[in-house]
Length: 214
Image 1 (cartoon, rainbow, N blue to C red):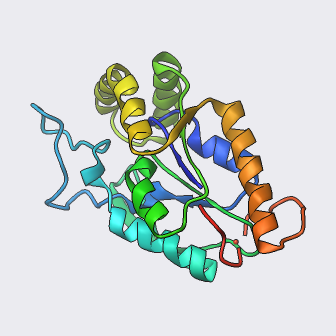
Image 2: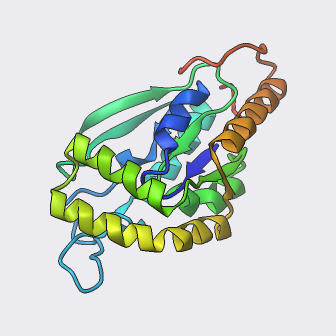
């Protein structure tokens, strides 16, 4: 199950609320000294909202390993440092499916579908003003970047939000609010249990036989 949406739209909170195992796609950002990082047009700021700032190949490989083996090693990324600080393990145990969430999830919808890994792809949308407020307060609390950078980024993303959602839906994600997303996640989990023969019980945050999709 791929979960995308503008930064600050509530993807991480929704994924946690679902009770399903979660693969954080933000951990596949490139490091800050990578020479291939894109810049915001007319600025020296790195454009962390551009797909070029993210390692799609490594993310897809991790999703594929989770589907085949139920377990994979993943980088641990510190956004405030723009650097990988270690490595961790994601284990989805006996769950019927898992959620791979991040702002670039839509970029890999087609690849995951072609590999037979996709159960559904959702784009969470809350509206530009709500998303701006949630994103700024979260990033400020977590010390992700400097305040001037957060304000410049926030204003730019608020103006671009509708086009971001349009792009993600064009790439194959279904735009929805939180309640519809939770309903579709629950339906996919039930379908995954039926496909794998897993018992109809709450999913613990640990992974599937060969889960039908992520």
